[in-house]
Length: 383
Image 1 (tube, one colour):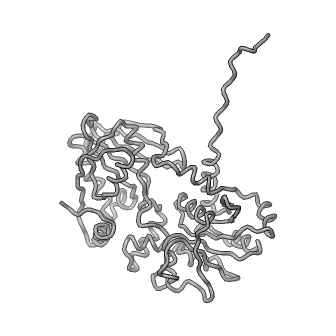
Image 2 (spheres, rainbow, N blue to C red):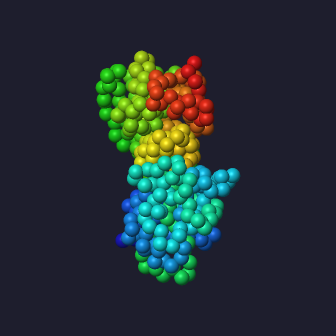
Image 3 (cartoon, rainbow, N blue to C red):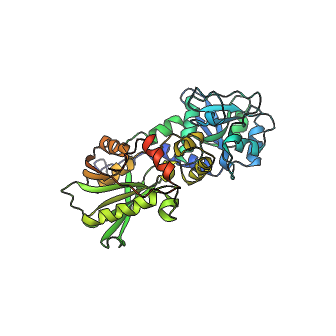
C-alpha cells in the first residue's frame, strides 16, 4: 500500500533538558553530592554544599590534588572582617588539613550557630579572600540559592591534572546557560494542580487552589475568600510563607497576625490571598533560623541575612503575577505595607488601583524587626 499521502507524525517537542539538569543539580547539592558547573568561557568548577558536606566528601575533594576554596555569597566577606569596603561574592583558600568543622564555621552553617565575635575571627592567618566574579562561580552561587541552601560552597577548579578523577566520578553537570534559561522569564510558568472548597473561620465559602511552578516545583496557594467581583478591582494580599509566625504564632515577626487580619478583611467583601512559598524572604527555613541566631547576637533582620550571604530580600513576585492572570484578575486593591510588591505587580501587568495598609500589633520581640523594615526596607508605617 502506498502511503505517500499519509499524514506524517508530528515531531515530539524536545524536552527541556536545561530544566532537567538544573532540577537534578539542586537535588544533588541538597544530598551533599558534588556537582560540576561550567561556563561559556570553558571554565569548570566542582562544587558541593557546605551545609550538606560530610568528612568523607571533604576527603574526596582534598584528594583532587588542587587547593580547596570556599565560595561565599553576598556580604559574607563582611562577616569575616575581610575587605569591608568591597561587596559581592568571594572565594577563600582553605588551609591544608582543614577539618569539616573548620569549613562549616567559616561558612556559618554550624548547627549551633555562632556569635558575632566568633564570626570576626574565622579567617586563618595567611588566607587572602578574592572576588568570586567569574561566570561559573556566580552560577554556582545562584544554584545554591535556588536550592534554598546557604550560599556557601566547597569548590575546586577543574584542571587537566584532576579532570580524569572528576570524569570518573560521573558528576552531574550544569552550565550557566542552563540556569539562565530556566530563570529568564519575569513570570514563571505555573500549572493549576488541584482545588477544593475549604470553609474558613472568617468565611465559609472559600476555595483553595494549588499552583505548581513548572521549573523548580515550588508550590503556591491561592485562597479565594467569598465571591470576589472580578469586574471591579479585587482585594488581594500577597503573603510569603512563614512557618514560625503563621503556624506557631511566633512573636519574632508580624507575619501570623498579618495573615489572620488579611483573611478577616478579605472575608467582608470577598478577595484573594496568595500564599507564596517564600519562607524567610525566600532564603528558606534553615537559613531563617541561622539569621535568628545572628539577630540574638545583635544584628538586625537585614544585616543577619547579609552576613549569611543573601540580599536583603531574595523574593520575586512573578509567581503571584502568573496566579492572578490564571484567576482572571488584572486590577486589584493590594493589602500591603511594602511598595516593592506594588512595583513588582505593575511590572507584570497587574494594575494596583489602591493600597490598603495592613499592620499588626507590636510586641517587645518584634519591635526591632518592624522598625528595621520601615527604616531600612522602605515599608510604610501605619496610616
